[in-house]
Each structure stands twice: as C-alpha cells, then as structure tokens.
Length: 223
Image (cartoon, one colour):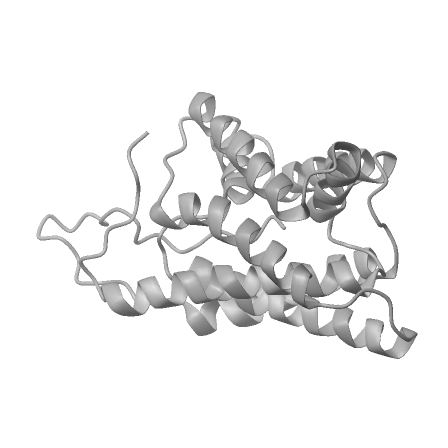
C-alpha cells in the first residue's frame, strides 16, 4: 500500500499539527482513563484487552491499531504518514501520560479530568485530521468498508463497529460509564467545531485540474 498525502504544500505546519494532534490525543485518552468514569468505545476495548493480557494500555492501543491497519489491505485503503504515526505515537504518549497522572482522587477532580479529556480529544481530532496526512486506522476501516459497499451509510457502519468493540471491551472488563455516554454525545459537535478550525487549506490545484493526493477533506472521526 502506497502512502497517501504529500508534503509539498505547507509541510512544516502540517507536520507540526499532525504530531501535536496525535500527542494531545494520547494525553486526552490518559485523562479519561484516570477519571475512571467511562471511556469511548475503542478505549473500553483497549482497556479490556489490557486487563486480559497484562500489557500496558498504550501497548494494546498500538497492537490493535496495527491489526486494524492490516484490515485496510482487502479494503484497498491507502495509509498516509498520519495513519502510520497514529498507530505508534498515540500509544507511546498515553502510556507516558498515565505514568505521570495519579489514580483515584475526589469525584470533582475526576469529572474535571473527564471533561478536559473529551474536549482535548475533540481538539486533537481536528488537529491531526486537519493536517490532511491520512486518517487513523480506525477511521479508515469505517470509510473503507463504506467505499467497498456504497449502499451502506457511514453512520450505520460506524455504529455497528463501535457497539461491537464497546460490548467486547465491556465483557473483557473495560470501564463503561458516564464518560462513555458523555463522549458519545460530545465528540460529534466537538469534531464539527475543531476540524474546520484546524483544516489546512488546499494547495494549488495540479495543472490538469485534478485533485492531488491527500487534498480531500478529512473524514469524520470514528473514535
């Protein structure tokens, strides 16, 4: 699979924005984990696998991301620099942040961690998708499936995938709670706010008038 997205247009801004977004995404995940009030569906799954395997949360996140990326092959999806970086950077950052954040604490502090984590997750999504260097592996799984089966809606496919991983994660011992519901309600509006805010404008169109690789608008987040 060839990488999508090129760096001929505004490379410094796009690289800085990509890695700032991925770093913030990992931090936001750690904040939600430490709130102990519930996680988004994929992180419920990551946490459940972490409990089952005794591997760190970040290690499981990297492993799952890599396995999901392999599913892109039959879907004929092409990864970008942002896709590959997503798999590695977020897992490393979430583990590093978890080592710095204490566990437990009063309910008010944990609610603050949850709210901060959800808002930071929305901003991080806008930053890394807005860099236009490829979606995360979980985003591409959703959009790739829809592209291969045009009759299916993105909303339906996303719902089926996320309900499935949420149920599996809960059965494995992942934390489902107020934070899970709050994330589900808030992440759509937050993404709608932050993605246009951070989207890097398209570069000059090629002479043929066709859109260049990696210039399409970023997809909505799949969590």
